[in-house]
Image 1 (cartoon, rainbow, N blue to C red):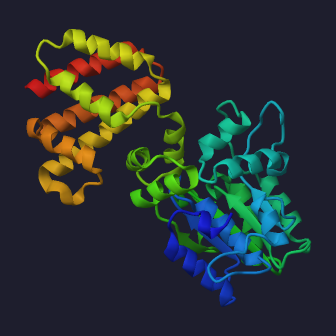
Image 2: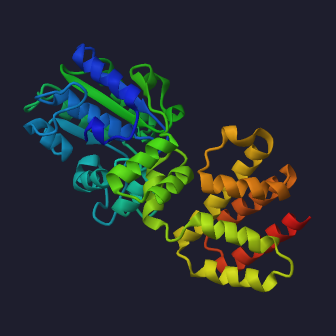
Image 3: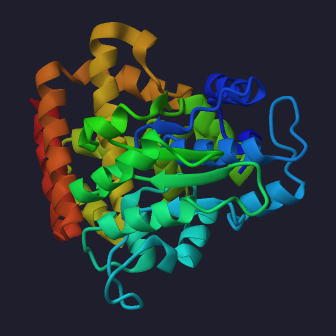
Length: 374
């Protein structure tokens, strides 16, 4: 992973690069960010830069022996620990080193993935993953050895909040007194679940969510998404690049067009037959497309409430959505918006739990129709 592959985060990238240039690399750092924020990708790019044999002004070279191995996640001095659980292939005593092949494939496919993506990837069958005390002991055994070829040994500990208390306590001594030329990069989504003794031994690197513009550029430049679709995906993802990639793969229709036409049907008089037709169309969509439409609707009603009381200045909408909100908000008030938002959110909840899509969509359509006409 190179810094140039990350959309945005320029300020943090510069700070990390300067720490290497000034030889002020903290031995234990906590990359803290929400899911999809890019904290894992940033930690990997940082690790690559630290051991690059031909560092450039603002990035690793990407072609030296070290970079080639780091980019494939196979460098002998790059170590990983992450939450695991038993699977069909690992029936007992699960440890990270038993899942390294799967882990490399998972991260190389999507370095913005979350723990649910990971457990689905390894087929954990909804079991709760964790980082055990035995994992901590393995980490200590590995890191006391000398590095094979790089200047620094690097351990990337993904989601340390999944360590149980015994595992976390076992790590305290090595975090405080690490072996020479050893760097710990902890990548967390929730610092509140970490022991204060772990937090006190790490230097915090706050990784913010991506902006809509950064998600948009990342989708267009790296994944070659059409500009119109990329703008809509960036808006729906709300700073979560992992969510943007999920939506990119799953979106089958233009949510703006569908939602606009659906709302117009809801507002019409004598519209029962039309709403029944809508429920048939909704039933024909994939499960993810159905969820995406509801998610889009929730965002639109949230933005409508903001528009109603603050005008355009706080909105994140594109021009096409803004025109719709401008007209749509004329028949809405706070009470209607809040009531419809609550019902769509409830429908989304039931859809996730396999309620009948046809009945669910007709029910929410009739509710919205009644609410809009009051």
